[in-house]
Image 1 (cartoon, one colour):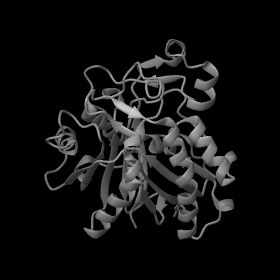
Image 2 (cartoon, rainbow, N blue to C red):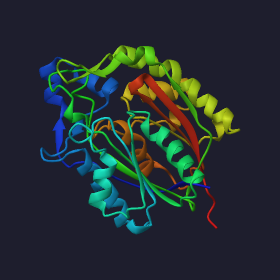
Image 3 (cartoon, one colour):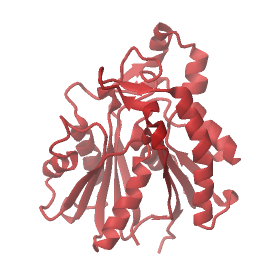
Image 4 (tube, rainbow, N blue to C red):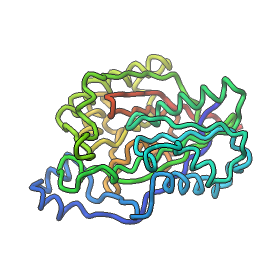
Length: 310
């Protein structure tokens, strides 16, 4: 059984205060707090690239002592904003800088906000199919590379960060069955504009998409895993915005178990779920529902179940 053994993450210390920017962009503070929910966004240093954040997250994981780097048998990086033009792939750059063994399988996954949950399924399946015991799933997608600082729809929302998840055969959390989907016909609602190279987001369309598919996807994931909503101790959603997270929690009837946590660093794209998992689960939590959703427009949901201590 391959599951989650440990998670570490990095959020750059530099912050940009949203209050004065919201005033400059004509966004009322009440809207900033109640709908966006982000007071400060984390920003990478000017010299930091995607691979720098990915390496920092992996080094934070190694520092915890749960795995030795020479035991890592696969390394997968989830990003849509790689170094340079994406060639060579980010995972190869990270592999070299971490000093991993040559016989380590290495590849990228080009997904955004749904990428962590997709990645859990892809990497665990890959490991099981090939008899691997220790793997790293790294998420690093610094949207500061593509956000227009004068666009109120995105500048006040996205923050930088990266996370490293250790998947192995002695996990703390067992992975359940997954529910996936994509509405590719609506993908233009969240994209990089070809002319400007900047991120475009239709916030209303993303909210409608999220409310339309995520509650249904989570209910399907619960059914696939033989669980009722009452058995779920925590719902960890992609931290798209406060209004998205809280509205989905209400739609599920689990508002008391569904929180928005990104107030001080922002929407970190594929890293938002592992950051919450690392910091906000309680010892008594036994079943945790996950859903990542966004770019594509894609979604993926599953349930984590705590493995009893031996």
